[in-house]
Length: 489
Image (cartoon, rainbow, N blue to C red; front, side, top):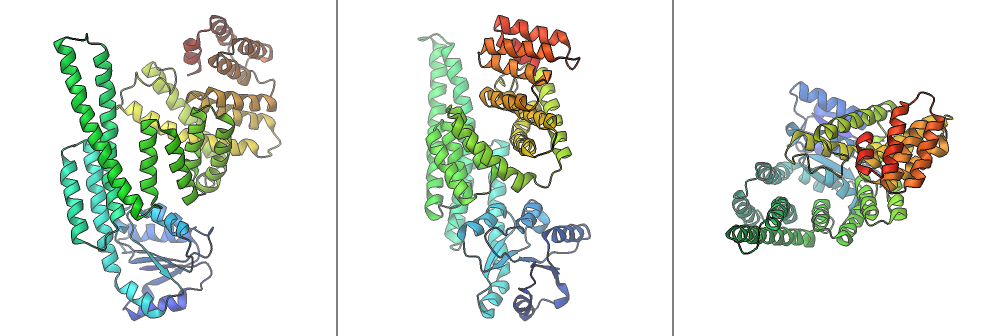
């Protein structure tokens, strides 16, 4: 089965002719105008053990990248890792092509200009097996790297590095930057793990008396680990430098450099790499969100909010537009319930107090997922709150939930901004007032917090247990921030 996706059915004649000339049966070529129909057809084919031999997709202008949905749907499905995805188009913008390359991590992606003559197109189709073979080299390399990282097997680094060198030597047509980026990622992940160990040894060193045998033992352990860490970082950066010289626009190289900068606490370079990624992928939600987070960490809240708002628009357009309002609220509620359960179980006050949760535990894993979900949840809720529903109490509830996701992540300033928006929309809501009071207390604004808590008591008509309000007022009077956090969990 060969899939030909073309909303305007303008590619059919020339492409069909080329397919026939290399021996493909006309009956195996199926026309589609909508990516959704293609996705359904491929799922049916996979369930029926029907081979999808090729996917050919036309794009017409910079914003028309709807066929990306097909790659996103199937790139993680091994059954289509040998199915070429042909971009058949007159689009020459490198950024557009890079969009597809970013998501086609396993599916072999081939780019054919429609303006090429039939001979060039026919030769490209005839050589698809070479493209598939080359693509499987990258997939095999990626699997080795992923396996070594997951198994935390440091000893495999040298053998993988040697194997990649051999591939480069033997296969001259390989895109070296992809292998260099994979190797850079391997070194980076082990360096990141080593950094955690270094911090643990450093803490141990502070607790041991200087001049003792125990101190010297721990110090030697620290020196050995530091040497290993420096070796890993040097090799990570060397391979990534090689990759970025060959292809400065490859998204993954830039992203790993961003992660290295964040791990070092080098926010200046982290922002530069994010700006590069935003330039490459202007519609991507996560890069704008992460840029906003850095500005927030630097206390540049006005700039941070601009990036958060930019991210929110992209998230709804790019990733959340297919989710209903009910789905968003369900996700929000489930996320909050899960976080509440895990944090209480671990006796942690919020996401900034995770030392009590083991890093390799299921609870830590779930919390990491919730933290990632929070970003998308928050931006989706933000868009919903801006919709003219005619019911300000509903919009206020959205803003309240946005504030909770900020507060739960430790972003109390952002949380307070959202609570103020909610109060403007629903000034007599005691729940929002009490949440705002608690958040103000977390910002050490105790007088304002007391005033807000008093308003919560005034407006309360049985919405909240009066004892909870009284308890929070008492904690505000005591300036007991930890106690307030625990009530809010």
